[in-house]
Image (cartoon, rainbow, N blue to C red):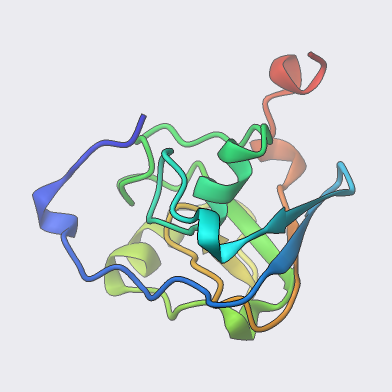
Length: 135
């Protein structure tokens, strides 16, 4: 469930206007995102990678409930990063705490694609819950 932290109030990025796909690695699972269905009722910003992943049954740890108060939903956007909203200062502060940071690292709860291109998103192996993955 998503929580609310007042100090993280901000205008949500615009939702996409065209359909696109996100491929989640290493599962190599691709989901179709139809902007008419957004936002989903899940954690993270509306239309965020976390919001989309959870809606499609892809487990992605998010200890704070998707309110940008931790770094457990750290992902690496391998393709399509330029189509995503810019990280806020709050997100960058949380990413500073993330393990194995890369230039393509984002918090899945804050990263909202604009739909202008498909994405490839890697969930780092240290961030996957192996118990849930096996189910």
